Image (cartoon, rainbow, N blue to C red; front, side, top):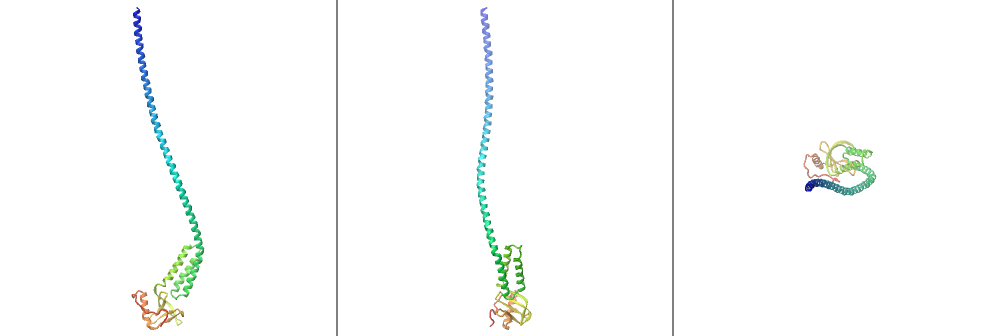
Length: 251
């Protein structure tokens, strides 16, 4: 009987030990799974933190780059602003100079017109109507308040150029002149500003404007042929050639 009790106790003990071992194994497995899950979660968190850290570092780099760019642009704009200030100062200075020029130029232009008028009056009598019309228009322009100074200056210098050109070319025109106090319609040959000659419509008589007397005078017949040729050259009916024309004094 005692042996049976011992055997039963042994079996119970073995059974209890097996159950405990199984329970312990399950606990270990559970703990391992929990540890694995915890490790996986930690890994994911670490990876997430790494991504977030990389993103933060990237933003920091972008901010630093932006800061450098803004600092660079600030310096650039400071230079731009300084240059603009210099440009404005230069423009103000030029404006003041222009005002000074304007103050002196307008009276100067008026003086030039007076000189042109006197010159035409004392010049040889050619194209009087055309030249005086141009002079009258020039005077009106200078007295026009709405016309800017640049245009006034241009018109004055255009007139000067036209007057200067008369001394460099030849021209044939027709006009009425007085010969011995008698009006006569004639052909006029202008040799620059050196001399004025006339030829009667019948081509038989020729003369010139005597600067000393201020009168139209008939020339000796020996000059008529060359004056006729000069008229034809001015009309482009004859090629240029050497001519015997009186200039300054008639022999």
